[in-house]
Image (cartoon, rainbow, N blue to C red; front, side, top):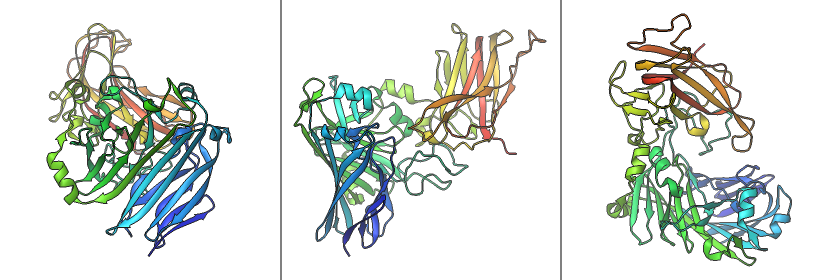
Length: 503
């Protein structure tokens, strides 16, 4: 058995005993880079464990690399593949300013693959990051250090493990033609479930912190710092399954941060550019090297670390922002916080008079979303995480959707255009989700409970609201539900349902 490299047309791959263990497919994307570097295998004969490895990040979106040279070198028990950009969407001029190469090395140790992914970056001419940041959206990020000092960081790795984030709601339809998210060879199917559940980060002092991969938690964790944490310069990150098996990432760079994407699907590794900069300029001659090493390890490695690790918790402010009712399909009972469910998204208030009550449902043991307008004339609760781009069920082109709710009002002071309503919107994309323009398409509002022939209607008790949307746009990637109260008073929304109309 041995390693080999294969290239045919736009497809290339690293192989072990004729099995593809890393695939590179030429596919120009908005993320930069000419391929999906994907399907990384950790055990001979096994399935891929990492779905996607973005590379050539420094060239940015508008200078996506379109052509490369491959240099493959085989050893006795290893193989090294170096990728050297030779052309970008904007031609070759940028290559005279920045030289970025990516090198993958794979070797076999104790029956498992060990992968090194190395970035080598050389600045050929003075590079003003402030200008390029505005023009080309590089993988250069600005966020403060933990002590509040301004920071500028470069993303040198962004692995997206297979099945690292589960569907936010039970899947009723398979993903079809959607370009995103791309999270593994199986993409999203109705049987798809999360595989990885916890993460362990190594701190600057060598100790460890752990957290479950709760979507809502990570969306609100250290929001003022892009959910980034300073980590040991040559430290470890572990992504764990329930049985203790883990992907072990080891970093080798002088100063870096880790970041867990809010969906828990990918893991960003950043190095600090400040030590190399003169103001906003990276001077010619600057060289940066950063390497991640990943392998699959068992509970004999992770269990001793988990025993000593401390749980990473939300601050009081972060908890208040995150402790909101979970969004559920098809019916929302408002009884459970999104923090109690690993993959749930949450409903969000958009006005001061919004609050969540865990009791008082129209039927059942659920709660209510309350809107109380005392100063403002409009209050809204929103759920903005519908659709494929937000890890929900895909929208079907041409399908109509029904949104219903039960509502009661108190101390109402409405006119004939006011009162409680439910509404929906679709975000229509004109192409692949990130690369195209988008616009919100109105899905309509439920008929008002107030009518011109009833200027003073009896609004006591519970009332049923219903909206049936127009046919869904052809390329809707995200949706939004709204519970709205126009006028002064209070409205209690209960048992909200969202479902596709079955013809």
